[in-house]
Length: 249
Image 1: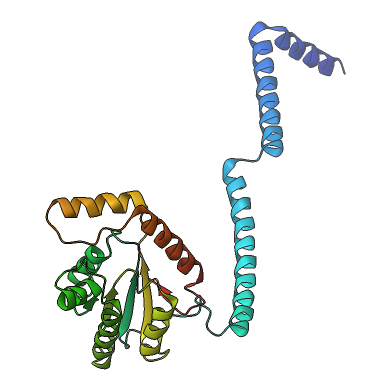
Image 2 (image 1 turned 30 degrees about the vertical axis):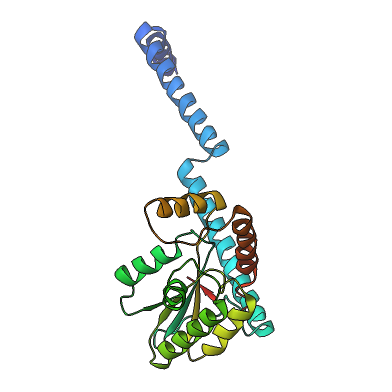
């Protein structure tokens, strides 16, 4: 018993020494820091864990949306057999590509670049070319009934050869009646009906037209009122082209 008491007294004396006290204090501080760190990790999860949790949540949400979308598209398909979302082009069929835009929007330039860089086999059926052939100038609009007839004949001839064509025109393409005639030449299952809508502000279009005229290019010069009305017709067609059976390029 006396030996145990003596050993305890000896240990207490060691603890009282400055170095021993410093070691004990350091150990206590380390333990406190570890406890604080564990508590912090518990209260504030790491960014990696947060991303993992969000990833799982995002995947669940995405799967749910995909499930809803699949079922929703099925209902839409059942309700509308001609929905534009379901309509696709068939590479084995010729394509009727109609350009929609106001005067001076750049339709002819787009058609030229498209046939140079994208589909070199496409034939451009241009109302300006037909108008110039019939009247001697592209700016003479006195024989538009004949221009329309020739447009339709050239489209029918091109599609009859199973070749794709671009209908480069302004006022006829903006007419629902003329578009109906084009659709009759390109029935479903035999021809792809595609539309390229080229948007432009009237002020921009007028600057382009006036620039061409100043350089000696023969062009029809519309009024700003004409251009503004054409903008309205373009916007109206853009809202309804899907129901009308056209695939947007």
